[in-house]
Length: 332
Image 1 (cartoon, rainbow, N blue to C red):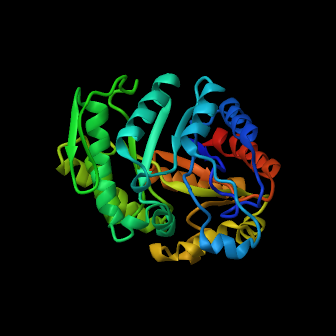
Image 2 (image 1 turned 120 degrees about the vertical axis):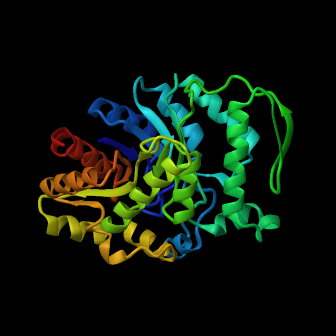
Image 3 (image 1 turned 180 degrees about the vertical axis):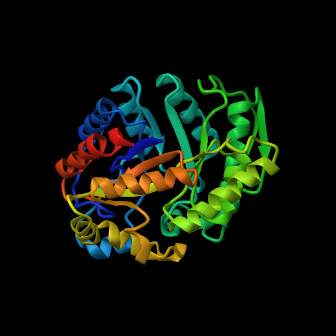
């Protein structure tokens, strides 16, 4: 089982106070995670402040750091730690330049960059930056963007003429150091399961109630095999929240009082049962969280990916990272 941490690149106001972390903090946190034996750190991708965040924090402007640049800094300051996006919003990116950025970052890091792509949680961000495309279906843009990206990083000379993107005879070098390149597909609906089975080296889903997660893992593995790929070709890497306390009751109380709960409520449209958000995430005493991880292993989870840690200060977040490494990760 792999474990990794989500940096606060785009979580101010969403999950953390404003302000929360600065540029040097991301690098220091990546170095801490490397020392403690985590597999990777990940950055999430937001462009503009969400309406509900503005209402919760009137007069305050959250700082959202671009994840690829932030992760490049983290990779430069570490030696073994993988870095990744959890996730990068593909419909808000132009695929030719994205492919160039990904290949460059993977080369400069020595093959330590993982790109996870998805729709993005908030359509309002997409509409704000692309008002002329406000009627576009982002799922169609994601599908076409993935195909265009793969053409660019695989083909010697790539051309594409689609509904949203077009380029001709693009010879892009260097290619990523990792071959094949580990593209992860983010999201948890059934269309995402299909994308992961077809294109992905990893599936970075959001948390789901465990019976539902188990069912979707089975569907993904079966569909992967139907498409002619090895059944285990896709790393199962759900993104959970993590919060430890001495007792389960204290952990639940702290979790439910955190800013992460408002974030969950803002995503109610994803049809997750919010009454299960404590049970289905890594929230509890260390012993309880270890039991949850053993259950996740038994249903096919390979990687507890980009763990989101609700905290009031950066010091609290780092304390949780250290506690989890010593009392959970070391014992699994």
